Every structure is written in structure tokens, then in C-alpha cells.
View 1 (cartoon, rainbow over the protein chains, first blue to last red):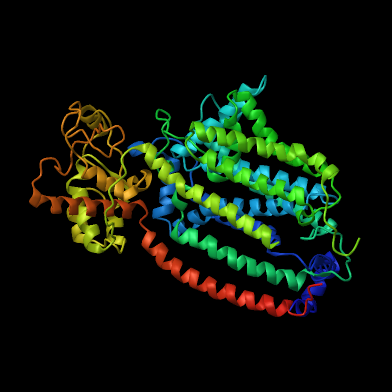
View 2 (cartoon, one colour):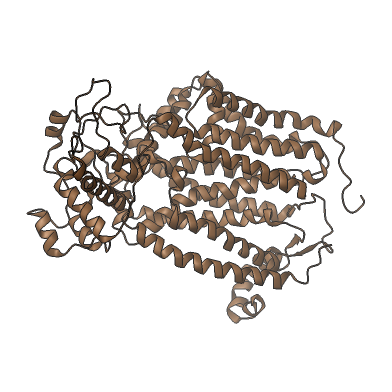
Length: 405
Length: 233
């Protein structure tokens, strides 16, 4: 089909002016991909799909959404009313809104799987260090975009979540209070906060789109890692991206959409995990909800924050837990990439995954003494993974790599 | 590889168990578990619920996101124009269901402004079962501290500002079934208006899922076909 399209006169006309044919060849039909990738390698294309879905549904939501915290009848606000108007009176508004709300969680599901795959198979190691670092930037922008977006419906959890998180900036020395006021556009979360968060919620996806472009470009320079984590012979062990991986990714999209659409159509609130119960109550600055927690995808970092009694320490630890991802490629000194051939690393990375899940659970639940202790242990495991990493290669006996090297 | 998969499965099982335990632990901390009732969205129930809503709830509460026009347009309720005209009096067809009681008067009489009920079933843990439990949860305070009609077993803390709307306290045995049905139908109505497109959504969802199952199957066959010549090593 591609050949047929590339033989049309229109294509030749465009090709002479853009070199499109060469781009298609080098990036698709002759772009080499290892043939032994497993299904864990599907999550990158899925993340791209969800990004596009979020941008498209977001564009339509903005046509009806109004970022305005003025009060209306019954203790609601213009912003809250506009979301309910989308849900009730706009044709298929409910579908677009639920796709966007479920999409936010779906985005993090696929991106966390994508990152986990990169960790397990050592995809962050040379020559893919910069590819990984660009990925961490994407993660941070995603978390920011999700946080800004959650304020927009102006429900109780929107309001109090934003209050708690912007409060954190106040804990920083010297510039803290100033930063906090700049973020809020005042002394407390209010209408100016809503408007600037709306602006940033529209800006961040633009940044994401651009940086994702950079991420894919960097990938196409260094090429994909593979489950064995070995450098491969381009002649013998690779197949072109198109049609092999286009069709495999398309199958992955089908499986993903089955899960995504199940939630959109049958369980959009996901029992309070995607849309929290308290967010159906309009924001009220005089009434703090009994239990404030961020949405599930931010809870692991929220637990790290809560681990420390001292607010500044908590903020620093939370920042460090994310910032440390940037230096991961340089902490790991082993020459072997994949956890398949690294018995010690494999145990460590699995323990790390568990610690993130446990941290997430602790951050989602109302704090108790037991949970605080569990959270502290999980925080130690989280940081322990990174602290131990530079020394593992000294005592780890790696298994022989395939290919007899 | 298989060992790893088994380990991963075991760990994800533990994680799932923990997630499943979360609500159990939450309700253990929050007090009395709500009663369960049969929430249904058939026309008869929803119309009976609407009746209870306009006759009883709307004395103090509003459902501002539900308009008289909506009550005609939602096929699940589908009242006629004449019925809508009778309900709305001199209010606009596009007006929401808004109580005659002003917020100021309400605050003076009850100590607080009664919340809007458009989203009440979604804004409370337990949903429609919670509203049902509240309506049928008025009792005499075992400690004798709270006046009759302001004590509700299912309300956090026990003291509720809303005085027994269905006159549940002191009803005799013959009335029980009727009051329970009123509470059930109005709770169903509240659950419906919380997300008025939910039935349409699920109906459409079945077609979407059916289509996706087919599409995914075709893509899987296509993947196998395209990949059949690729040797593993």
C-alpha cells in the first residue's frame, strides 16, 4: 500500500520538495527494530496514542469549559456548572469528558509500564542515557499537567489538593513564599489560581508534544533496546518497523482500547480511583474534607512527602525521589543491561516496583500509624534501590549473554 | 522468565488484595455500614422517585442541574409536556428544579443551607444506598442527647440537620413497606440524575466493546500473518 502511494504523481511532487520518501524509508519501511521485542515494548506507542486522545478530547472540552470560580446558585461555581453542562446537556459531552478523565489515568498506566520496562531491561543504559533523561522530563511535565487539570472542575478535592500541593512550595527557604504566591496568584487558592492552572494545563501538553517528538527522534538515533539487553547485528536480528511493528502496535492498541473503553463506558469513576467521590462536592474553602489524597498516579510521591515530619525535609525527599531518575543511567555501572542476566539487579528492581505500589497504596489511604511505618519502609526501599545501584556490579555475577560474547 | 512471571503474578496478587481491602478498611473507620437496597432505573421507579422528590425533597432541596425540559427529554423519565407544565407552574421550562425555600430562610430554620441534590448520589460514599439509609435511618438517640428527628444512625456523628423527611420515626408496621419503597424510588431517582446519560452510555458501550473485540481479533490475525516468516533466532 505504501509503495502504491509512493508512486503517485502527488507524492513525487511532495517528495521533490521535502524528501518525504527518504523520511518514510529511514523512519518506517527501512527503520530497523530488533525482532525479539516482547509485548512490554508496546507501551511507548500506546503512550503516544493516549497523548493524542487527551489533546483531542481536551480541545473539545475547552469549547464549553469556563475557568471561573464565581459562585452560582447552590454553592456551585461557573467552572463546576460548565463541567456539569458538558456532562448533561452537550451532545456526547459525557463521552468526551469521561474519555479525558479516564485518559488521564490511562496515560499514567501506560507510561508507568513503559518506564518499568525501561528499568527492567536496562534501556536507560548507554547509549540510551539521553533518551531516558528526555523521558523523565516527559514524566514530570505529565505529572504537572495532570495536577493542573485536576483543579479545573473546582470540586472539593480539586481545591484542597491544589491547596496542599501549592503549600509545599511555601516550605522552601528564601523563595518559597514568593513561589507559592506566584503559583496561586494570591495568598490562597482562588479564581486567579484556576485561571493560571487552566493556562498551564493547555501549555503543558504542547510542551509534551514537542518533547515526545524529541524522545522519538533520540530513539531513532540509538535504536530500541531489546529483552536480552544486548547489542544486535543490524543485518541478522532486525526487521523493518513497517509492517512488522506497525501491525504489532496496532494489535496492542486494540487490547488497550478494550480496557480503556471498558472504563469509559462502564466504570468511569473507577470506584473513586479516577474521579474521587469528594470531587462531586463543589469547592468550599471553609470546609476541609476529612481525607485529602491526590489521584492514584501521584500517591507514591505523596507518601514520600508524608514520610518526613518536617515539611521541608518531605518536600526535598519528594523532589529527590523524582530528580534521582535523571542520574539513574550514571548510577548503574554494570556492563550488562537486561535484568534477565543480572540476578541481583533483578531482585532489586522487582523490590523497587513493589515499593512504588506500596507507596501508592499508603498515599491513597487515610494515614494510620501502621501505614506510616509501611510507608517509611517503602520509602527506604525506593531510595535504597538507587543508593545500592552504583555498587552492584562489584559483586554481582551476571549470567552469560546469548551470542557467546 | 517463567519464574519471573510467577513472581510478578504473586506480587500483583498481593497488590490487588491490598487495593481491594482499602474500601473495607475505610468503611471500618467511617462508622456504620450503609443498608443495601435495589436501585433500579425503570420508568415506574424513576417517576415515583420524581414524585417523592418534588413533593418532599423540594420543600428544602434543589436539583439545579435537572431542568423540566430534561425531565421530558430523558427517555428513562419522559414526562409529557402537560405533566411538565403542571410541575413547573410559572417557572421556565429550562429552569432547574429549584426549591421555593430561600437559602437565608433555610439557614435560619435548620442552621445550614440544604445541599443541592443533583449530584448527591455521586458525592457521598455509598451512593444511592447511602441516601436510602439516611431516609430510613432516623431513630431515637440511644444516649438521649440529640432530639428525636435529628438523630440518624447513618449520618457521620449522628446529628443531622435535616428533620426526618419521610416521617420514618414512629411509623407503624403497615407503613414500613410504603416508606421503604418511597426511599428506594427517590434514591433511584437521585442516582439517575447524578449521571443522566448512564444508561445510554452503557448501551453504547456494549456496541463499542463488541466492535473492539472483533477489531482486536482481526488485528491479532493480521499480526500473526505478517509475522509468520520472522524466525525467532
